[in-house]
Image 1 (cartoon, rainbow, N blue to C red):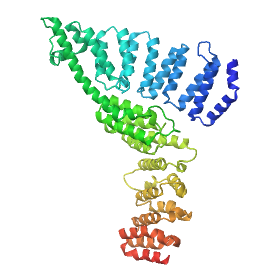
Image 2: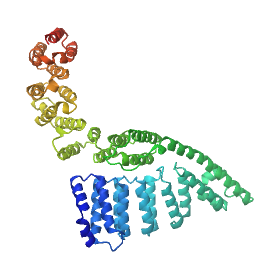
Image 3: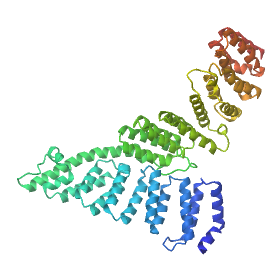
Length: 544
């Protein structure tokens, strides 16, 4: 009790907990808090202070809630429970951690299996865990240590001897960084264990013995020389395989693995160099072309750990599922998960919208946008990231259009440009030079023009911009070009009416000080739509 009270009453504890209450995503503060608590605990044993133990558990849980990709802290948390004999909690922690990493974290599997070797008594259950790990991280370039553990367990705890040899044989074909170690083990077994022709079946299938090694296991002649010849044939076959795998390992190492300096979680406060991002990007292209799904997905997971806050890596992963695997639902899950990590979400939401349209789950995206908008300190129109704002607007337009779609256009055809949408757009435009995307917004509105909504767009946006004297927009030629285009394509007016309206009602509102600045875009408009009125624009230039 005394140790707990001393800790919670300390100035350092108060300072750190206050910081974390205000800035829960400050990783260094969590790390300092863990160090502080562990310092007060000292050596972990079953006599640990109950309150300190509870505080330490809570700290790990809260920290991992904000930073779920911190593999080492899951391991530390599980080791705490292991030292206290809480084996059920150990399994729970590792399973949760592995789920976060799509079961493809080599570091988590190695540490989990090391503990399982000590606490899982049932050999079938233990081997089942190793088999599961193999499915997820067996082809990892650095999985040599895992395979050593697996082979050791098979040797010591598996009653089916051939399983050890078949597993070792499997490892020989995987391009591992430590591949030569397994070839040395294999060759030693050939020398030591093949004492009879029948033992060849432990190493190679009967078909391969007959067709590749050209050996007759029922040979009736002198066995000694024949066995030696069979061993030499098997070694030659092994050497050929070694040469192929060696080339693959060297290629992968020289092109990518040797250049990767960042292979751990990098918080959003740290930058991963463009060079490292580029290496990971090219590495992923390389493994995708190999067309080995487990290797591709394991390599993506490796990249995601250190590049989790960069949108391009999530988009690339989703595109892999869409284009290569043709798996819409896996792509959807990747994109949904990315929203938890990526700092820039615009392009992710754009692709997610496409995927959810294909899976007919627009209701889900609508809900997602509402949650996203509610999470913002202000409205979505206030955020700096234009792409995120624009994806939201495009989706709302799409959603409203589909909700109000009818066979014949009627008065409801304006519904997809609701007052709420136009209000958000106008609010965004009022930021003027402080936000990006004004041209995209106005061009999009003109593209949305229908027979019945021209007046709505003009009144709610173009006239409103002039009324509010938004000089950043009014002083640019694009605004007047698009305003003129909106009127020119108003099918409710005749050609002469449109021409007269543009000249007398639109251009007449251009402030004289901007004539020269806007004339280039007006000339472009005239050359395309009103060639007979080019002189009017030239006269405007002279007038200024």
